[in-house]
Amino acid sequence: MARIIAGVSSSHVPAIGAAIDLKKTEEPYWKRVFDGFGRSKEWMARQKPDVVIAVYNDHASAFSVELIPTFALGCAAEFPPADEGWGPRPVPVVKGHPALASHIAQSVILDEFDLTIVNKMEVDHGLTVPLNLMFGSPKEWPCPVIPLAVNVVMYPPPTGHRCFMLGRAIRKAVNSYPEDLRVIVMGTGGMSHQISGPRAGLINSAFDKAFLDGLTRNPQKLVRIPHVEYMREAGAEGIEMVMWLIMRGALDDKVKEVYRFYTVPASNTAVGHIVLENAPRAAHRRGVPVPAKRPSTKGRRAVAHAAH
Ligand SMILES: [Fe+2]
Image 1 (cartoon, rainbow, N blue to C red):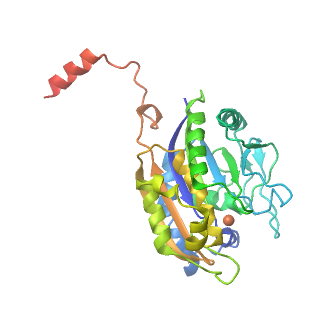
Image 2: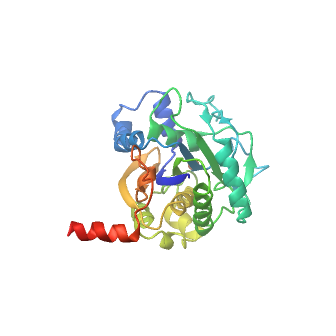
Image 3: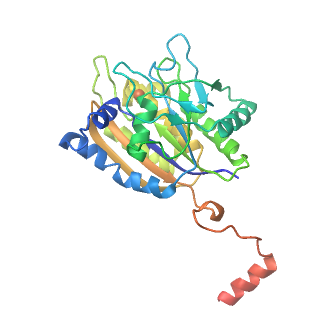
């Protein structure tokens, strides 16, 4: 059976993608940012997920203002990089996992979450930048990626609670998929930033760090944050953080925080990043054989007795 083993969140600042593409990652300004993801890349290389579900938002690349799905699940076999005005980013085509994506669509829609099913879509920096941050710049992405696009661009975006509950529904869907897959869910966007208007450049580190704390220890507090609070405290584009709650909802109630990173600024935003793991279960640890049979209660009592 498939299982979600961990969740990762990170900002998806477009300038990070430009720094990678223009080979500026060793420049002092950018090195500070990329060094913060070094441990995460090592962690991801050890995890070797079979599939990543990437929760991100499209920036008018695949969907224009003429069509704005609240939640859109990529069920295609592949998703080419979008041309965002400077030509498509020089990154690999994202290979999907149509079978698992279709299974998630069926399970989640029957659980009364009305997803839009997308069978053809290009993906922009919102998805490709976090893939670079977690996987580096390989010739091919190391595993299939299922894109889940969330509207946080046009009012009204979904609430944090709705996002969290969608994460729960995705977890249920993954857990009912028969193939033995290890799945990582990625939430992208944020943290505090505002790119236009009188408050352009707004950054609120206290709000961001409290949000990171809440993700690990008290997500139920975060799901009650209303849109207006994101706007006031984290800037107009800080609303992207609701996508992190889909990632968190897909994890177990209790998680282990493996790593976090926070730096200001990158471009004119705060960059935040966190890695959370579910408690391992034997069958889903790499290289750990699955026990053939659970010992009987009597047997366990005997073993416990012998150990004392
Ligand atoms: Fe964005």
